[in-house]
Length: 262
Image (cartoon, rainbow, N blue to C red):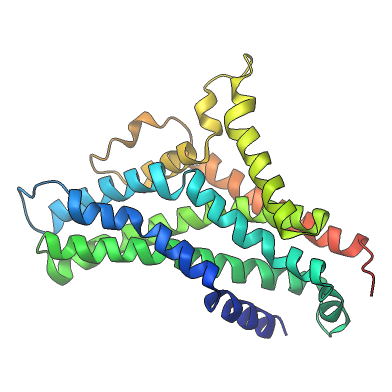
């Protein structure tokens, strides 16, 4: 039953105009790169790999995982359960032979699938364009494919934790708009207001984009300039995974404790 719920939700998201607009927005850095890329002085797979790691790291930290990318994830994930509760259709799901845990997981993974497409397609387009630009051929594509997957996994891990929190707030607040505003307010406070308090050392570490830099340096060992991001990638990864798990647990508890009027 969870597979049916997942498939239906993914289909609904894929045909929505909102997802297409968000995908177009996430393609902007790739379009910018088309017209502003550096002059090529060396061709081949090795030069491609170095350039790909540098460029995708910069675009990910400065745009894809910035406030704009975070807002995209919040809007998608806040709507998954809150729209059902707001319309009253949550009762239809609850009376079906499907566990509440399957509802939460089905909704979450469908949202993550949408997020993977919205961010993964631009990453892949950029990779293919750079392979052609560096005349690296299939060797260049295979040399950078692991980097593409690595960046996508980190994106899903970090922004997925934000999506989990958004889902939790959507169960509490019941309306997509309220949940989106609350999620963005919480994230903005955690990243930009609390770090200004004088008893926090290294306040930049509270920024999600900064933590992505910390995670990237674990796999991007070439001269990518990521050494400026101080922190333990393993600890950061464990933290974001923990946020996802706790958010899903409390979202499930929220569904169990709430009463839905018919």
